[in-house]
Length: 583
Image (cartoon, rainbow, N blue to C red; front, side):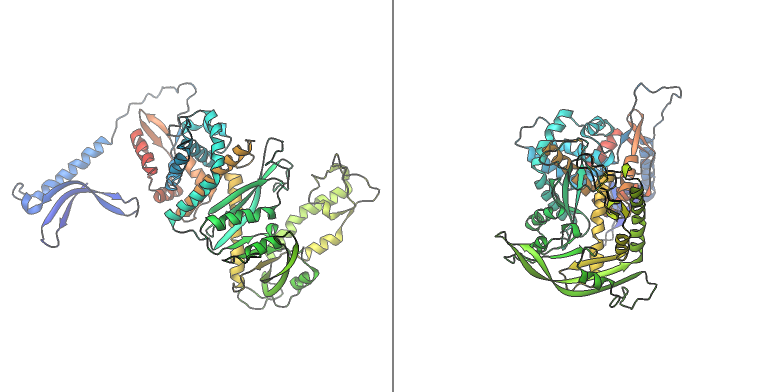
């Protein structure tokens, strides 16, 4: 503490006060915190021979007294043993998670939705636990409940209450997503939905049973367990926007209009340009975006990947034709180039389903970009090498393989067939042979990539850059499946599955916002590791000892106005810190 002297610009009088420097939680800049107001210097001179010297000493004494209050003498018994089954370590990193959870008004949302339901438990408290545990210690619902004691919260409910609440969460999942979207816009400014990224993934189950939602379909992990499909849209900043669940046997392309339709209707987007890979590209989906039969306003656009190997012979000829290729600066390319690109405007016929159910050919006007990358070519050959090795082994030892274990390699083997019941490779009387011609045909197109877009005015660089943003959504799926361990899913009922994915979605949004708030300097994995390590042990009475501080912890603390730098905190201070994180 120090004596602060504040001259009045109008009167010239000097006002004295005792202050100390603190950091403003909003601006993060140092500011004065007035501890005691004293008075004007000219008035005080009638009472003190030297008011300045006197109150400097007062400030010094107040500093010493505060330090004395903050200093404890602790007597330690070095022979003391831990009580049986001791586990007193507590996590405090979850305060940063709660900060954003409450910033998004999720406490109000869940409390309001439960207001007239007559629940004997607090649904907001249950969801908060599910979200915190999904980020810091992902696992089953029972695991989250069992580990609730490592947080400073009062989770006053039973395990059966958690399972009962899942049905309620399922009924409000769409409303929750809309609420989150509105709150992100309120807290961070209107979301940039001029570009919307879309992709589909799926989650598998440990329970090998199908129902209305869990169906066997094309698994991203090449598994044969029942799966559930999820279509996810993200905004231009890579923040999750909206998701929907579909039965496991739903094709990727069939999820598109439902998810994008919800975004268009309820997310205040205006015109959007949807970026997606070729798995969702159909004539119907393109026609839907550009207005359909009714030519709805605003007309939306697209940036889609376009299959080179699956294209027409005329298109393949255009791809392999060396004329027109140049580098990203527009200069002609040489023989040893690592990257080349060209584009053209085309009128393309697409097949669409009209409202009457009849098929019709429609014309769309697109800009088509083709590029080749040596890095992509090398990657394709490296990935194919192991598959070709398996294909050659399949030819030599067909008895080792089934339809499942030969997946990917079988397309390079002629005459391969499988038993309909056992799925084992069977002898058809025709010798298996490695298909050299197929390999050579595929190698011709290694490294080539094509993108089509409705945005005719976009430059080649903009088109490629916009499409590359789709990797953000792929990274999001990696975080969801890896860091948050969204799958395997341990619940089985449809409502429970929907509630599980909702808690994972909220956790994912919070993680992405933590990344955004810290300038995208740290991966989700590093943020989760940091929050887990911001933990403490009860050192003595109500004093907790911390032993971790890092650049990430300081950055998260600065972005959430939570001070994670203290080595020791009293329980009352921890509770005060948590209370502030919920405001």
